[in-house]
Length: 197
Image 1 (cartoon, one colour):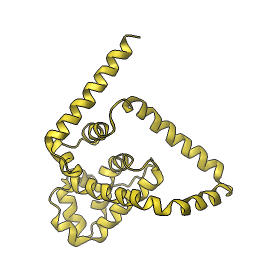
Image 2 (tube, rainbow, N blue to C red):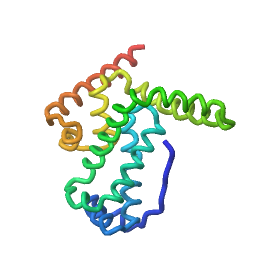
Image 3 (tube, rainbow, N blue to C red):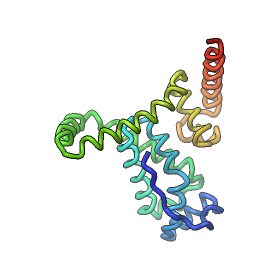
């Protein structure tokens, strides 16, 4: 993932998400930067569960922050900023997946044009590096069923609570618990299996 960093003030580090959202409502750019710093990577990682193209995910996640800045009225209604951000990213990614079928032929034409550009080599190198990094992580998690893996990553990597995960995915807390049990059992079995060799 491309690292995007801002120099957010130390005072923002101590603020809750809700306090930062209130500051964003008052057009405080530092608060927006602090929320961006806090959640950008987690939101991109979450977006990758819907869309394998990192560039598209990063664009959609960035759009979420632009939307956050532009929609002061909606911020007032947000009571739980963290799940709100994940739900907005999920919706953006689902829109992307839905439009993929329509835009597939247009994308192919664009790819053909990009392949003939002089910076193709650098683009390929960058893409291969991102894919290698993603592959290393996938090798560890690839034995977990897809839905269980998504919930596991949200819990362990994004540090979301089961209740937040259930709200984001629209499932019961019990379903989240069951998927976590499946993920942990699969990892445990994989570790035991690898020790035998």
